[in-house]
Image (tube, rainbow, N blue to C red):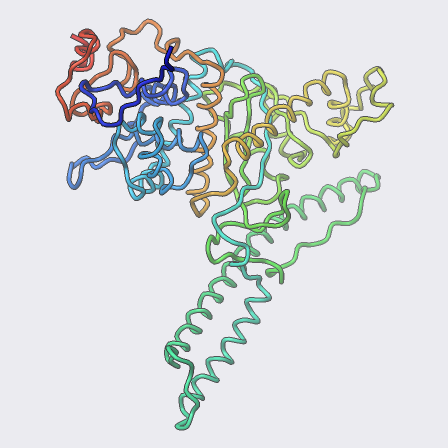
Length: 509
């Protein structure tokens, strides 16, 4: 018997318009993201209500395109544009349309409110689907350094900026003196004295602005340090008045002006030099609050603060109300602050667990032995001693272990599986917006991997009430996001008359 092969014909055109959703398997995450984004309220999207200019791409389709791209490790607007041609799943997402990189970049830059709203709505969707258990949840909070869209070599320190200003002043004087000499030696090809003077004057102005910015930062830092210094001194004086000896060294008063090593980056002035896993780099500190059972990110924010000591309260307030009331917070010792813990636990409904000191990953023989819980300290004992007792108990140890099992692996997934290691946007506002988009993409990818059934969220509603990305039936009329299906280029025929009618009418009639 002769060998048989599958017929592969590149020449015969398709006689009937295909269903683009059949181009990828039904288990593909693009279907889940399309259906989930279709259920989101896109009323906060910035659109041209006047209808002037070229036709706009539907906001839901553009948001779905960004989410799917970030979930699959594509972050550049030019790369996303290329995937609309070469990636089958993206072509299905865009219904065979091709937004250019300018449209993609502008939509991502202008629609921070839509991304933030979508993040909260996805948590509500997860709660309705019983993936996110709302009510007295346990969250783990941590941060990771993410590279800024700027090189640390584009930064200048306060001392170095002063030196460069003096050097530029000398060079300008030398050039002006050279211009006054009638028999001056000509400069190299393509160079002129006026242009060289202008270039140095502009550089000097930039350095002056950088030094002024560092002075403003130093003043703000000095005010914060002064308040902390006065608080510590008042506490020590109170202990002396009670006849007790204060512990530790006397705190030093804060300095006034900027330090010689204070820096400003010319490319992204709001980024900071931070120490990460690969040494010092121009970075932002991206923080996330993760619900320990569902492994969903329920709160996120990006800051330019390298440390975490004063960030616990702000990181706690970033948790979305859609996740429900928080019952327990797990943080490492970098976030530990007596004032922050007291403020969070003031209402009596939240319990904070934090390591007082760094623990070695290797366990000693003494730690392996079963032992009774240590006795509770005096209620008037220092907060660090009371917190150490919480984590030393058997129940406290078991609960605190959840932190390293939840938030830290999620940062690893975002870095390695998603490949997100550097921000594409610059500035605090845009960086925070992009970090929200990253965590939103992670949450939808997580829900897809869990096999979440979105129909649960729409239980009891008629089929015609499903949003435009649902299938079938799909609203197929001008103004609908799915109207972009390119089947309109040919007469709509189908082997399934019922499916054909469901695509021609919003009601499926």
